[in-house]
Image (cartoon, rainbow, N blue to C red):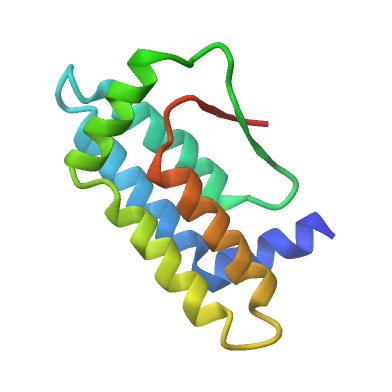
Amino acid sequence: MNILGNILWLILGGVITALLYFVAGLLMCITIIGIPFGVQMFKFGIFSLMPFGHTVVESSQFSGCLCTIFNVLWIIGGWWEIAVVHAVFGGVLCLTIIGIPFGVQHFKIAMYSLLPFGRTIQ
């Protein structure tokens, strides 16, 4: 069931959001300061290609004040826009009965991508 969900997910916005993550990740990795942000974008880009069957969990390894600072810099830097893209896709997909599970998944990813540091994907 996860395979079918992931295939439909790619058609219903997964490819577009993954491309946004990958392009933004490449742009962030140009500078040394942006590398942690770029790596996080690559992680969520891969997750946005295949979200069904994977979960995002709070990481005890990467918690504390550094994650809070990076999350604040993430929001100030304007990367909250990717969360808005997920929310828009989620709203559009929830207009149809078939799209509701995919819309809910977009809303989940929007919440994760708003504050990405301190989370790992399993």
